[in-house]
Length: 75
Image (cartoon, rainbow, N blue to C red; front, side, top):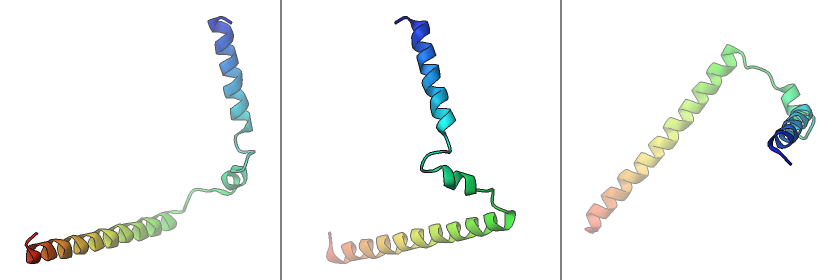
């Protein structure tokens, strides 16, 4: 099989996969998906940012407690 035949075979496989896109197990989800409104996007950003700050703050408190504990134990 020469390079031209291999490239045509690859092209057929790619086109076959592309034609099946949206028909498999994720097809229904992709059809229902839509772009969020600006209000929805702002709310998502707000909640995500709050979650990141809370998790970061919790990690900092744990680190602070750990470092204070190791200093008091002399480790």
